[in-house]
Image: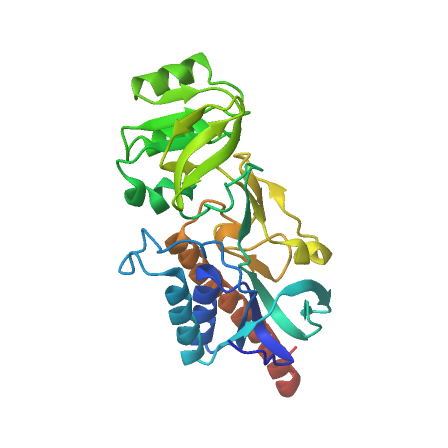
Length: 322
């Protein structure tokens, strides 16, 4: 990582995770001047390994990012440490300002700033996050297989999550917590799959010898559990886009807020693309990287079209063709 920031680039990528680095790689290989600005706060930092990623199964997140940075640099791209605090449009370009006062200009933007997981205010939940408090069965299911798993009933995905985790363990308990109790149909589904339902608000996560040992309810009862699956409210990191008219929108699933974009990553703001978790709340590393690559290719194509229009105008001026 470096603090050196040039005065202008073809593309500024905001966010240095899988989507941003793969987008930066595509652009650098397209011989574009590109910088990836990374605030250094990856969502998967607490995880021991990345899972479901072809040919890189189990690789530590920090190692994957380090490889990605070197690959971007290998083709002339830059990776800079810093937090983007604001972006404004200036004519046909963008002015990107960092929290420390540095700034640069860009012809196009790729936003890959990710999201923030907002956890329920239950004592012990945040402290165990990424260890024995997890959220995604496809990220952590194999690692917690055949253990006593609890599922926190929060938001619209709680019961769905309980049924999913049942694939990895026969010992699953659904904690209704403050959620609406399961409907008759949902209760039947849970019962048919052998998922026990515990009512009552959760007071805390119990820990013994640096391991989760159970879930304590408000009435003092403790239900032994080794793992707790806790849905989060996922909110896109996008406050710096406000001056461009892009604000996080409530996701149709009710799971959080995201920045809408089309299948190619193009947002409603001209010249701005987005990829990864800022757009797709459920994207794992592989999907985020693929989306970053697609957006990078689309940005290059858009710049090629602009470069061609300018070249034609200059050609006509030189040749007198109208």
